[in-house]
Structures are given as structure tokens and as C-alpha cells.
Image (cartoon, rainbow, N blue to C red):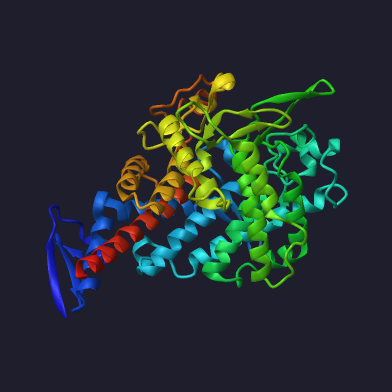
Length: 497
């Protein structure tokens, strides 16, 4: 055993002794395994860069405040602690946040970092398990409340009412019971309300399968019991509605038709269609994990066919074929690109598009039209006959969770330099309490005005706290640390050859 002393440029406080840093000297006890020594030094230098370890600890502490224990085995995940309209729980945000935290948990466990970032053993397993239980309780609540219990003919006018759908969000009481959000009780009677989104079930399935692979089923027994009851119903729901209009990831429709004099949203979203493809695949995988028969007569290929047939097009002569974001129900493909399309290729993975020219072109379109060398993308952009459609939510700002997902995608492609740029920017925006904003106003934002005065009503500021953003950072930075260390190992093996 030998000791290496690395003298640091700026001495750190003694209170950071857990890092092994005392009086400005970083002490690393090493074995004679040079390969292990290098990885340990690299791990510590990556954590110290940009004061990263302290920022990770602050964000972990803050994101924990979003999760409120409820009942015996449930939790209420509040989307934002600083924006009153986000005090509810969204299935989408919860699922994505859970998957982000599972990515972080895997890396933190792999490198023995739990104690250094302030996480107790079993803490993540328990809190994320509670969140999974609540999400399945919500799915059961919506399934029980949908009239008739059987999936209706989608041409039935009732299928356009929110109360006959699994909705995007819900509330959780102190005893763990689930209910409609108070603002939604009137909106469920609206035709194709914005709270009708079809990614809620698929993302819950993805998060559940991912959780089981990390932690097993001991803390989510309640979820498993519900899944055994309603998994076939969920699969049927998804396949029936994959080709019908719904609010997209952003809770918006982009074209409307008149039904009995009432304007009704009529756009179908490519991100949503792709999510349903993945949801059907994960329903089958979950059935295997919990040892029940898989959903019958449900073929994800039908959804993939629909996605490829109806959403591939060009937004300009130089773009090549990309996955456009929106189609009008009985009409045209709307030339458009959406930052959420990254998830089609990173998370949902319809087989015939992965690795294709369409994937490459779509990512390039996002980089060109939504990022323009910025670290954060704007949400979407329309072209041609629909270029008048602008993002006016908080002046069409640039979004952190989408930047994090884009960076995770680039990480999978090995672009560590671009990922580091995005991480560095996000770390510069982390607030003292560890919160991370939903969006910022940087180029190429300001697509439009703010007709609903969201910015003004929020004290002339953006939404400064979002669980999705905070967990996205933690998942991304953990994956980045792992990728840096893996690259060192790979490079060293190449040198040895």
C-alpha cells in the first residue's frame, strides 16, 4: 500500500474531510493496482471540478423535499415547490424523475458514493418505491372511474371527454388516497381537454420496469397487485388511442376542428405515439417480471407502422426526412420539430427508426432550429403553412429537462465534450437551495409574447424549481461520471495493446 499526495491549488475546509482532503492535500490510499488508482483519482477530480460534489449534494437534498410520504406506502411528488400551479403530481414528471434517480442510484452505488452525497442506504429504494405505488394507485383510480370499464369505440363522442381517460395529473391526500386535482374537476367534461395525454401509462410502465431491475419488488408489492389486475386493460387502452388526437408533452393542441359548434383539439403527436409503442413493449416485459400472462392481441408493430407512415417528412429542402412533431387527425403532417423527439430515439426506441437516417436528421434539426449552439433547447418550432404557431409559454423559454435528455442522448453517442458543456451550464444555474429551473430565457428563445402573462404573474421570473429538472441533472451528471471513467478504462486498454 502506498500513499499519493496531490496538492490542490486552493485549500478546502476541514469540514470536507469525508473527501479525504485535509489542509489542501488530497490523500488517496492506493493499492498496487495502477488501473484502480487512476480511476479513483479521475473520479475524485471529476467530482471536484466546478465544485460538482457539493452541487450534487445540494440538488439531492432539494429534490428530496418534493417527495412527501403519504399513507403507509405512498408518496406525493410535487412537481415544483416554487410555482403554485405545479403543486400537483404529474404521472409524466414522476416517471421521468424516477428513471433519472434510478440512473443516478446505479452510478452512486457502483462507485460507493452514497455517503459522500448524503444518501442513506435504502433511502432511494424506499422513496422511489413509494412514488411508484402512488402512480399505480392513480392508474387504478382512473381505470375505475372510466365509465363502462370497457374500452369504447374511439369514434364514440364520449372518448373525447377527459373523464373517460387516464389524465396527466392528480392529487394525493395525507392518507395516500388519490383524487382529481381541484382545477380539473370541471375540465374533465371538456372535449379533448389539455389534461388528456397518452404518455402517462407508457412512462409509468417504463419507470416500473426500470425500478424492478434496480431494486426488485419488495417495496412495490401494492403496485404489483394492481398491475396484475389492470395490465391487459392498460395495453388495450394504449393500442386503441394511439392514433387519436391528444394533448402533447407540453399539454397543447396545434389545430382544432369544430364539433357541434365547439372547437376541439385535433392534433396527434409523434412523441406520444412513440411512447405508446414503448408502453406496449414494456407491458409485455412487466408481465414477464411479475409472472402473469402478457396482454393478448396487442401488437406494438401497429403503432410503429402508424408513426413511420404519418410522421416522417421534411421541414425544409435541406433537412432530409425527420420525425415531425404533429399531424392533424384527418389531414396533413404539420412541418415541425420538437425537442421531445430526442426521447423517441433515447427512451422509446421504435426499432425501424433507431440508427436510421431519420434519427440523424431529427437530432440535427433539433440542434439547428431549437438549440442553435445554446446549451438549452426551446420546446418546438413550426415551418411552412404553420410557422405562425409560436411557443408563448413564459415567452417560449429554453428548457432544462429537454437539455438534460438531449445530453443523455449525446452521452450514448460518446460526445463527452458537448455533454460537459451542458452540465457546466446547468451547474452554473443551480440555486443556493439546490433547486434547478424549468426554463431560462436565452437565445434562441423569445419566439413570441406571453399573452397569458405567466411571467408577470410569477413575479417577473421563470419557474425556478422543477423536480423533473433536478432529477434530470442528477441522472445526467451520474451517467457522465460513469462515462468518463469508462473512457479512461477503454483508453488504457487500447494503450496496453
